[in-house]
Length: 283
Ligand code: AMP
Image (cartoon, rainbow, N blue to C red; front, side):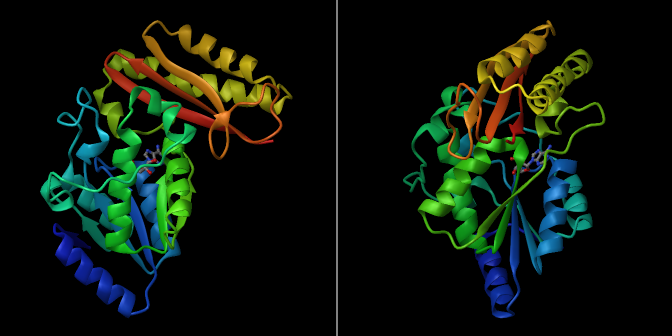
């Protein structure tokens, strides 16, 4: 596996790879790689001739009071894991390499899809994500790009962007990888102290309960969200940002009585750490 730090070197590698007629899989990450990321890299490796993993803590998707500086950085470990999972290139650019000038071009997906859920408390987040992912798409020209269902809203926003901007690639969304007790793997889990870590299990428990109720025939969207919120509130360390339900794929308001696929998503703080999780309610 090659560690690539500059745009110029990456472009040269992509040009050679395309010339050789190889398909390219891209896995965008912010590093601090865990088994969730590993599953995406493994899938990219299995489905493409050449796999590029980007490892870049993207400053434009963090708000001014968010954890950009504290975000975990584990480059040596990332190299080992990416290589083991079959990556051919690990692209680790500096912020200056990705954003050479202060005047810049933004890519912004508008509408409910970026305003609801995380968009409400993180108003610039999806603009930063869409912009950096567009840059990565242009640099790596992937046939397929891999994202996790863990960030369900992000996946829908990027699908919309690909459709609107005619990016010639397929977005592949892979299942959420969890710890054995159910907590969704996240680079931010390292922020949790031992008691918060224990408490955080309530998220997957509550979502699993709602999914089971749905499977048993409950179709009242308000009842399903209330069930999840109520269960999360039994955990005194939890501080709910949202427990909401929206229609897939565009995140339009939920139907009162569910007849199409919906996303039930939560964002909850434990101490200063904000965690997200979700389930899809498939009809
Ligand atoms: P991040 O480094 O947190 O920006 O995540 C990079 C990619 O990995 C995103 O597409 C995430 O959705 C995905 N990802 C993060 N955590 C998980 C997980 N637990 N399971 C599956 N995919 C994940």
